[in-house]
Image (cartoon, one colour):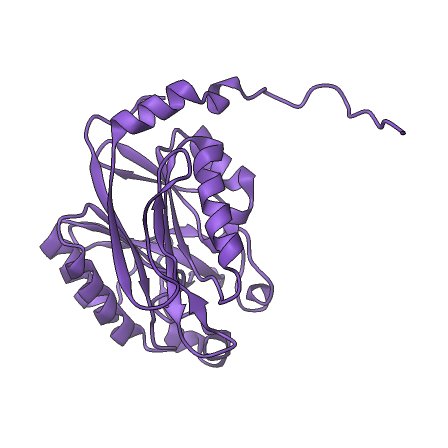
Length: 280
């Protein structure tokens, strides 16, 4: 794998959206992108635009979703402030949304807003958690985001609990893994373990955004973070309160980690002969 030539500055956001208020949450996202001035990528939480609030999503699917065309492009005037923020900052924004597709599928998706202000539903969550299966359809394939000479696998929350999802990104030569998420209060141990593990498993950077605060039972626990390729946090937020965590991804550190920890090149093509059962 070839390391990028230049460092890249990123931001992981933790913030509290308002259930059902796509326009208002897009304006909040634009404000947060402004706080991350100077970064090339800003990652916001899962389902940030409608808020991760299943009762609202179930009650008003038309109002809480944005529509994508057959190629995934989204043209929704509610997102105009976010488009402008991306243009103003020369920033790529990854933000969670509920998306309605032309074939009738509804997905939990990551929208990518590019520095020109174009919006695309770039990735649909493949691993649905719990009651999400009653409201959404699973995504059909992985996706890699290209920014400058960096490659980033896209994941959403529960995807990151599956080592093979991060490994699929690494197998596509990803240098990092971008994970908008919605972790509920009480899950701090798992929140801090999964994404550090995906970083170390694959010797890649991980940018983890998370919702924060809100009312029980949909109260979220923040802890947004950027992890280095050995799983150490370069930046991490508190368990409560809005924050924008900024860190610079260093290609020299990436190359050094991959030279010292060679799991990606050492991994076998398969697991060998059928497993043996040993009775003790």
